[in-house]
Image (cartoon, rainbow, N blue to C red):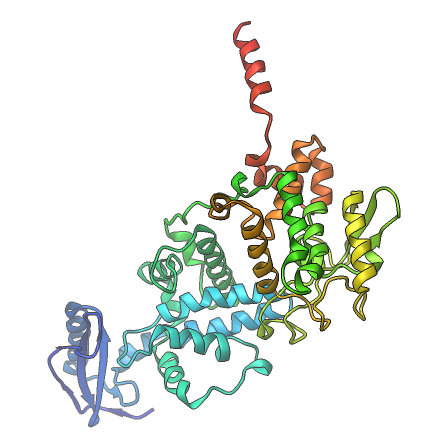
Length: 455
């Protein structure tokens, strides 16, 4: 270690290059200029005073760090930065996560990492930092493309500015993180579910840091902070009645030259069997019992959720996965009414199946993208519903067909256990999520309460 007793000091000055007020403590050790930026003038003056006291009592100063030996001994071994630990967090969860979970993890870090930085000059635009992180940094090493020259200065700045992970023990820093996840990239209040998902990412990252001994405890536990409350229930205004559902499904084949016709069976599965879109996308011929007369049966065993290619195992937009909230090889049996049996038989007669047995695909054999089937659905709404209904939440998304199916079953008096089994929910989640969609209970309840009051 090279040391020197040749130390000179200057007065604290305002940091003119920073957007927010900050101050520089400046000194020189062995002819090499040193500086430290602090948020207030008082902090900078106190720091400089400590240096002067060390020089006054004759301490040697380390030339590399500029610190006296007493202060250098008090500096803990450098831990990872928020950026570095964010990278390792993504990698640690990659293998066991679905593509959408990987995307959610990175999406949360796109808010956190650019917020947890020092106020260094030359900060790149936030949109540039997010693009850098999403496309080049927050990926496993074997998936990281080379950072293009135009983004290398931004990466250099971010690596220098990223705060030490240990700084998250400071309540002010952790509140900065919570503030960052509470707003959209445009600076507006984020939706409650978005805040909840990003807070989960922050919590999991900090728990991993505790597990790996990078933090002593999860600093979130010491902060009194409440996320915005999410409803967690289905809006009854989105649910179509059977007559409306039949009209919407009848209009699907009229959209486009062939796209609507190819999607008719997929939408019908969402309504008559309450399939999720990714479950319908994974449905194969061997999963279907379609008798000529009476009820049929679907045995759902795989889902094909859509995600950006950078997040999937296959490098394609759709990975084949097990069913949501179920064991890897678990299946779900759903009896289907004759109306759906007829639709699927007609679809198979007309289009057959893909090489792997899938029912629903484009004319080129590819899975339908969410933008493609959502676009068809919006056209269906416009030709079927009134202008007032189109402007309302009624069946606003294809997924609302599933909500309509589950609501219909519950209101028809099907036991909650059977509905949960068919829909792929637990009973408690089913009743909580669909509580507002169960109708016809108010009048009987009023009569019972009235009888009790009248004694």
